[in-house]
Image (tube, rainbow, N blue to C red; front, side, top):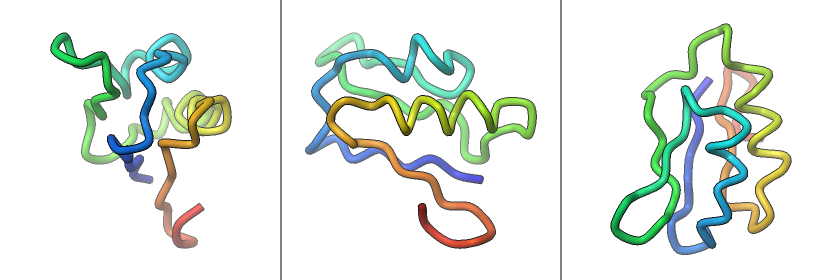
Length: 69
């Protein structure tokens, strides 16, 4: 599973970082999301999906074996 962040859409709310801090961070420069991992570790799948679902600007998406979500 991979997480893709659209920085043109991100508003820097930080919900992703609060939800899945091992997967996401925020840039110190502009507050926009940073994806910390190439592949989401299996133990972080649930939190990563929750962060994507909770993102207020819909800047995050998931690509997994079944295709893009």
